[in-house]
Structures are given as C-alpha cells and as structure tokens.
Image (cartoon, rainbow, N blue to C red; front, side, top):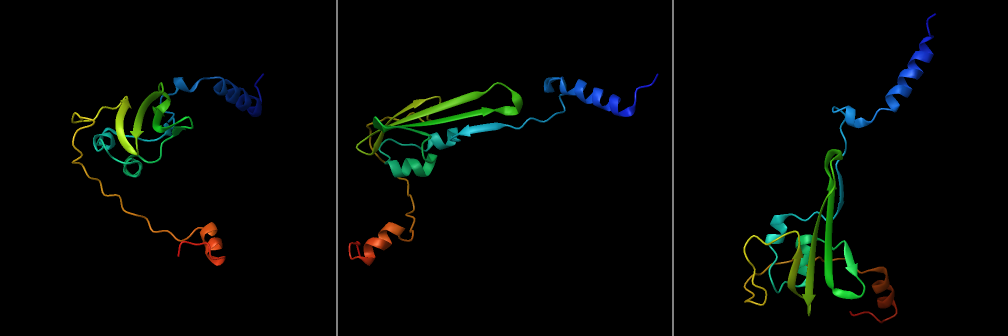
Length: 147
C-alpha cells in the first residue's frame, strides 16, 4: 500500500530537520562579528603621547570602559567565521594625563614603539562643527549661554 504524498512530504521534512547543518557543506553560515573591529594597520598608527581624541579617531570608541579605572580603554573583537570556532582579539590602552602611555593585548605595533620617548608623531583630527544641543539652546534663551 502506497503512502499518500502529504505523509511522504512530512516524513521527509522531519527527517531533514533532524540532520545537522554540518552534513551539508553547501549551506552558507553567516560570519558573526562582535565588538570593535581593530586591524593591525590601525594599531601601527598609534604613538605614545596621543590624546584620547586622536585614539578615538583612529580606533573608534572603546567597547569597554571601566568606571573604576577611567584611564583604561579596552577594545574587544570576536569573529565566528562561517560556523568555525570563535576567534577573539583584545587591545588595552592606558592613558595618563590624557596621553597614551601603554598598549597591551593581542596586537603589537609594527615598528617598535618607545613609550616615553620624543613625541614626533602628529595626527590631525578634524573638529566637527555641530549645531547647539537642545540644552545649549535653552540656556541661551535664558541668558546662560556661552555666546
């Protein structure tokens, strides 16, 4: 006796649903990126004595800021490429008096940096002109503005 087509289709769907995707190499899995994308080229541009604004211009805002250690910025990046094991890279920057003094983590500068040496590296960070915030507009209406 033949099974009706609906029962055959449901049986096939249930059978395939129980299979893991690892058995099907043609199935594409999406790369999962999390955190700050930091490349070696970005780290190579860091120089001792850079201020926080310059570092933010190069690397972006840090993923983790410790409320108890305001002078420490942590950049964490993890990727899970195509269902493979997750890779994680970390970069920790330490500031003293708003100047970069220490670099730790999985990235190393291309040229050996001498922290505390002469500060001959200059990075121009363009100033972004923005409109006044709502609070600044309210203050200026009542005469408390900086204008």
